[in-house]
Image 1 (tube, rainbow, N blue to C red):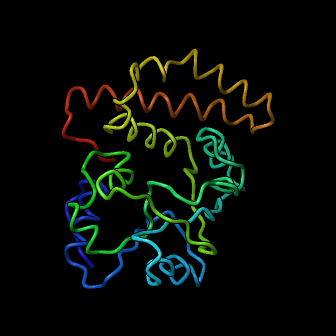
Image 2: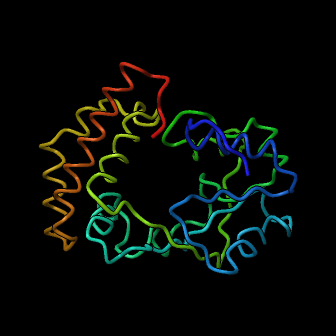
Image 3: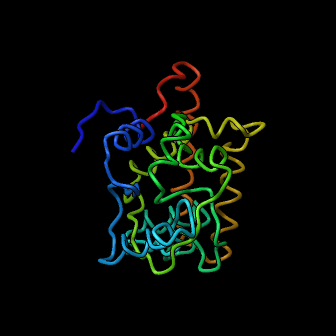
Length: 218
């Protein structure tokens, strides 16, 4: 086990990859729970030589009983019970497992804050392949504070600055219209307070990154 100063997932994963001795790297988060055969299924296409890296689209919502978690799923435009739709494409830029030599060769993740997990594919020139049957669960933010902090993290990251007008995209009037439309379409009413809290977090993150751009992690 490595113990490092807290500087976000990119720095931690890059350090772990350099210290690792195995041929395949697997990236898991503290809010995930994996089924017994998850690792075997996830790396199978890599071991078979079919892919440089893989991802799974079978990520279930681990805390569906929590109203904030259900609201966060709506906020992220996810299905109510899982992160990705069942018909999600078989290729994606977000790697859950990858050959270590290829990861090291391209310099690992770019340390850009939120969205670092999408920085490998452009450097590799290939997307991850879906690993069928690799089932895991993900705990969505379960409180207003956690939803707020996730928004704050997004606001601090580099990805949000690819938007032409990030402040306008996350403006309260627009957010309220989206939430009300989602409620009319059948999503949980808790998406309204969740969106308000989340986008306030984004605004704070944007302000903080303007004042201190080097501080982009949670």
